[in-house]
Length: 211
Length: 226
Image (cartoon, rainbow over the protein chains, first blue to last red):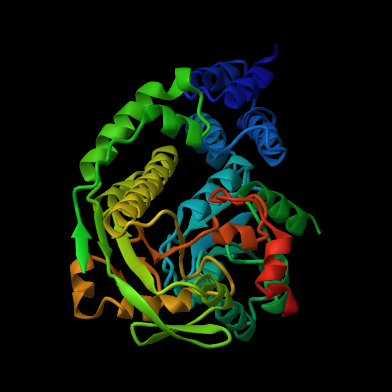
């Protein structure tokens, strides 16, 4: 088995101990950090994501794999920065004002990172001003918002209206997620997409940025 | 108001492994360590009131002088006089430990263990109420679990506790979110038939589902008319 395939396989197995060693080994074989990222680490996470979508595995296994991926990522991160390898896209993400639930949002953030996106996580209870400021400052491609309450999900509309007023809505794709949300709510508030679960959030970002 | 603090909180590792769908061989040590941490942080507090159903409207019901708007609740309380509004929390410590963890997997485990602990408290209360009030069967409903009984109805529910509310250790923020976050609230009521709000909710892939969606039951409640 080639070393990159081995890295992907170890991520699928969820072994954070072996991934750094294999990543080092790949580097010593003069394989570029970018290839290790895309053909090893991200490839492993892609398989995990597919299996999760099919219902073959569950969140804990996804998180274990993501942890293994992160362990390899730590090694190549400085090299990627050195060689100015850009992320696939930049995503600003946060749970909206008034809402303190963030585990779902954290899982989405981790999966996005695992798929090669740069993620700026603003945490929870995020006011619209902070979303706007970060979208503009980071020149984000995607803004992801999460809410777990029917009383806080309405705040997403306010954020989108503020983006429109600030002339930022055309520059960033807005995606939303959280238990009480639906496709029709996303349409109503003029979000660009809705993801019912973490794995489909990654697919949604991929689709929106490939349009 | 009655407060129960001594809820036996022994989480079964095998059950946790099963609920989280983990591989026992690989994860037993982690789960045992997590349970030890969690059990030291869980501070269960179960508060409940005994309240009485008075007037009933078409889609409303008055309990201890407070009006609740929900057709499902109204139908469920058709033959009921006595109900048990409750507020349960396991305190702030576990959720703080989870939020502070930079390890997302650990955070996920602790959050889920917290939910399981709340479930244990709910079951304990149910058993306690049956014994204390000589009831055979109880069901419960919580504001926010159905579109028909939205989370905004937390406010009237909490008002049933009056001055004693501060003793429950739980408060509502302006968005009706309970603080501490690891809290549950609702209303237990005697019933002849098993009822779960999940039976009236069609949401797919819900990890918290307790019973399958039942379209016929939805019709019975007249929820298909809207």
